[in-house]
Length: 461
Image (tube, rainbow, N blue to C red; front, side):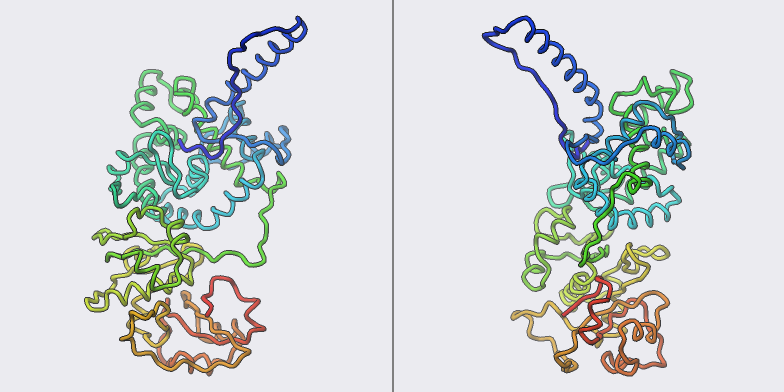
């Protein structure tokens, strides 16, 4: 299991040349026993990857926590026992800075997991396991070889049709790994028909759980808990703790900071042609560090061309630029739907940001409305692109690009940016009698005084 944070382990080395008075000896023995007991109580906790941090801890009031647990809607059967309370305490009592980092990651990746689990008829609360497993760190790796937000072992990943080799480790891909985890959960639930047993089996293996159920005649997790490895004994309580944390963190004085300029939302794309990442970084404004932090599955500066597709994650504005680059690189052998993003009804034909309900379709950009976007990646090595003369904006205007959302109209877009509808049509050479296609990228020139109030997902020039 991946260790989110290292706790404090106390070890005593042999004391040489020991010499002290009787009172000091008694004190040392007492301290040794006390701290040894404390270290042993956290041994199983280290295995689950849930460890407490010292300092700046939110308040923990046990009676209030008990009351909330009694009424909390939880995916698994819930018993309020010492292990459960301890795991709750680890989450809401952890260092606030680390907790806020986890909450920030949930903003990008929980909508993705919700969408995929909903498509697979799975309860979305299963997403809380990613907090237990990896704290939602894409490149999380454990000492036993598990990796990714779902901490899949290499053999398990390959069974679930993920590629794990010297070039690509798809366990580190949040989209593909979540799809694989969904398949695994469905198989486990078909076997056990009980989510607490599914979660236990996810940790220690289905055959271990199945054998214990048969030998003990028990019917649920709590009936076999003491027979399981200590790591698994704490795994279901840790899931309960993570569930409690996500439902009640404000009550423990854990409040996410509202940033004045929040980060852009992440869009998840699926492509089928190979991409040379060094060339991408050279010809676009996409930075290597950012790309690799969001896409750690690619090991050798290359996205392989796969029939099953490869996943790419980028902020919205950079995804527009990436699609420009991708389609230009493949313009001599164009294939419709080459660059596709995943949407609930048609997962292999469209692009969607899982963080907001709008679709971004590169085919609409390149074929249906080619004049709506300039190739932002143009460099000295790309000189054969015939560019149109841009609209001449005055010093009080700023160019933005807007991705058209589902069921969004031109008049709504004009109202949002406080521009005239006629100007919007002119800037993008649009025919008002024709349908506005979802995913079209529009050029907009609002006054700079209006730009400050716009949502941060827009691409700016």
